[in-house]
Image (tube, rainbow, N blue to C red; front, top):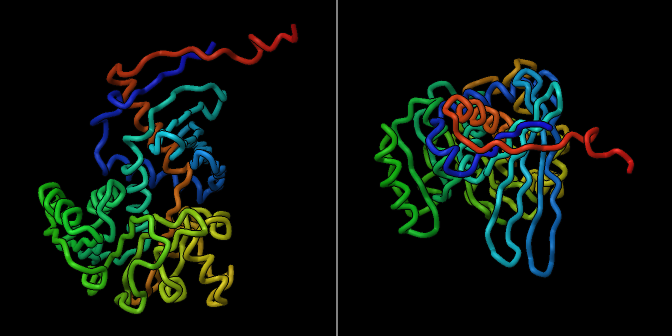
Length: 332
């Protein structure tokens, strides 16, 4: 039998700050750059009732863990459930099972922040955020741990939502955060642009990007999702989380590819290669850079293991037992 720690939602609450997630995720992408295995998501769709069942995985040898996400969304409940299994990378034994919903914006935000730290100018101080949900909040809070921000402009279509976001983030961050009435107003003059939407059409005009700007796009995880226009992709030093997913589900890149504006050679490098020092990030102050963050098991496994270690230190969670196959598969 293997003793496995189950961490319910309340067990993972307030175990870590955004900077802790960024530290764990940065090291995980360094491991990826040094050869750690990871695969893009697989997604199964159901028509009636409409829903999605998906998952992805990674092995982090230096962390000593492997795992990923399995989650469902939609179906009759029109909600989502995130299940995060974590295994020992040396023995293969299950060591933890997490309710992964609470960590989702933080681990995804951490991946975005690692992209900012690797690709944005060192003197980047202003941010445009397009989107005002939980993912946008996670992205901004994590980004604020890797750059000294002074100004943030947020836009989303619903006035009440963007104003609520600005009020909340003004209390959490040292930067001045203000809601604006259009994506163009947010992007103008911004050093960093973060898109955290479910858009199927571009959310800003790429020609409006300042030379030297960095873009983190995290809502492009299917061919039908397209936050960035072709101009942005074409201008950019384009860095995805996983090269393999670019032609699978990176909607904006696929659209630019279909238009003939870029080829697959336009992919500069994976984020892990930049973090590990195998490839340069930006090479001059005027480069426009894009980190396409569609979600991987890399940040998920890193965040889950960090939470598992902290929960263990604080005696949180419930012990479960998993039977080893050799104990039960006797052939009888």
